[in-house]
Image: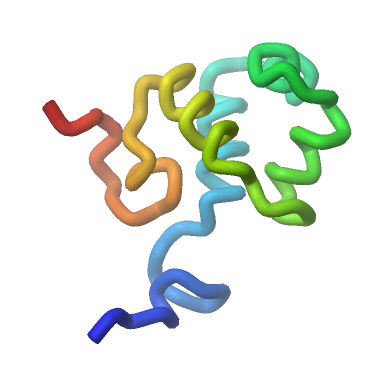
Length: 85
């Protein structure tokens, strides 16, 4: 049975908003710069990064492509950054 607690607040999986911020900061990028890459406003990107708005799948895909990481890594389901072959 799927353990939903793992994927909700208080679970062991890293919150994707933390991953988003860490990746952005590790790459010395501002929210505005990433928003421009995504074709959105800095305000909307900030809302995704804070978890105030759900992140659309197209944004998840674009961020994964930009940073060269898998969706599982971005969502905190694995610590392995790379994509599957």
